[in-house]
Length: 121
Length: 107
Image (cartoon, rainbow over the protein chains, first blue to last red):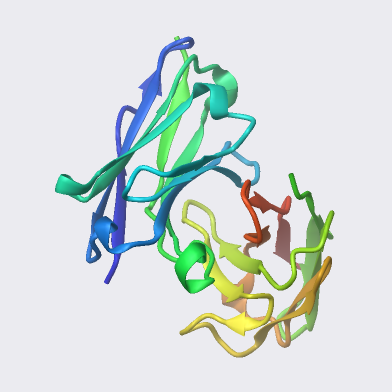
């Protein structure tokens, strides 16, 4: 069974960098598929942040691209997200998920439980 | 970017009702549309993909239809466990985009 788990600080100061890691078990990220991040501000809808392949190929949301870096860590079967210069608007629950569209024609099928990140001084 | 417009934003219904939610894409996405169900404090769960394919383990009272720009999610007979928020998502091309959500409430 594929499982994903987000980890990282729950509180980030404005103008600093938000850093999260997604640990994957039950499937090797090097076996294929893209892996994505999605966020959801409190009480609001879902926003796709970006997706990454194990080789490092990425797709980013244009609205976040200038502040966003995603990286794979195949040795630890993880991938990470860094979002710089954060503001209160970046406060959200951040989810990681498997993105199998390019290979299997499926949408995000396995999701982490989500981690709430609050941007506040 | 492809814009996804969902309607209604809120829906009040009773157990046993037939419920339909609509999603419209700003340009053709063929059949690359998914429907998710989300309950409070939980991650979204995929119900339907490729517009009409039922995800394994999802009850058959859920069905999806449409192609191009117009899509619908139908719940044939609403059950107590179905009160939740539903989102459509296009995965035809990056950037992937979601509809604004439809909250299904108890009438």
